[in-house]
Length: 398
Image 1 (cartoon, rainbow, N blue to C red):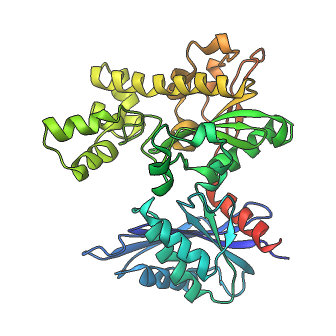
Image 2 (tube, rainbow, N blue to C red):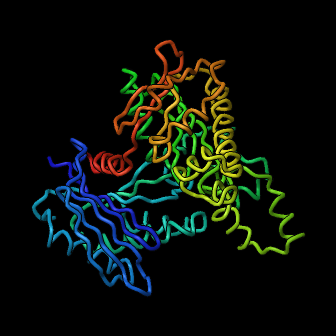
C-alpha cells in the first residue's frame, strides 16, 4: 500500500502543502501559496526535484489557492493522479477538549472544528476553509485532521486547570490546551530513538523554539505539561509575544493608558517579546547586536534565556527524572547562543553542555552534552508535515 499523503496547512492568507511519503519520510514536492485575498494578487512557489518554480497568481480565496496548487502540480509535477495519494492530511490548530487524537474528517468533524473557532479565531476558520475546498478538490480521498492541541490533551487536571471560578471556566472552555503538539510528538519520539529507548521509557523536556515558542514536559511519550495555554500567548518569551505576564497588566493599561482590548491584544501578541524589548524580531539579528554591545539586545537575549531556564527547572521538578533536554525548530536547532544561555548554570541538575559540540553547525540530529552529563542534551530537527502524514496513515488504517 502506498503511504503518500498530501499535507495541507491552510492559514488566513497562505496555503502550504507537501506531498510526503510517510514510509520513508521523503517529500516529493513542497509548495506555498502566499497573499490569499491580497489586493495586489498572490504568489505561488512550487518546488520539486530541488527546483523552485515561482509565479504570480490571482488568489482571492482559498478555493483559488487550491486551484493554483493543483495547476502547479499539473505543470511541474509530480502528477497527483499517478503519485499514489492515499489521504489528505490537514493541520488544524485548535481541537479543544473534543479531539485528543487525529480524526478522519466528515461533516460533523468539520462542524466541530468551525465551532471551536472562538478558541482560535485567527486559525480555525482558515483551517476549515482549506478543508472545505480540499474535500471538493479531492472527493475520493479520505481527509484527516491533525490537531496542534491533541498531543497535550493527556495533561492531568492539575496541569491544565486554571485557578479561576470553575463554572466560568467550564462555560467558556477555559483551560490550558497547549500548541505545537505535532512538533512535540514527532521530536519526543525521535529523541527516544536517539537514546536507544522506547518512548514510554524516557522523560524529556522539549523546547520548540521558533518565532512562536513552547516547552513541553513529556513523561513516557505523553505530554504532562506545556507552556502555552488557552492561547499561544502564555509561556516563553517569543519573537513578538510576551509570554507569561501578570494578567493585571491588561487592566492597568486599560485604566491608565485608555487602551482597548484589541489594542492590548495587539501589544502582547505582535509588539512584545524580543521585538518589544529590542526592536529586533529575528534571533540571529538579536544575537549579533548583543555581541556588538547593544544593551537592549543583550537584555532581551538574557530575558529570553532566563525564561527558558525557569521552565527547565520547573519541568525537572514536574517530571522527577529527566533523561534529555531536546531543542528543536528554527532557533532551537540553529542558535548555539540560545542553547547555551538556556542551560547555563544548570549543572546542578546534571546538565553539562559540550561547548564544542554545541557550537558545531549541523542540520543533523545530534547529542551536544558532555560524555559525563547525566542528562543528555539533544538537537532534533522537527518535521511537523511528516508527523501529519504519519498520523493520517494511522487514522485511515495503514
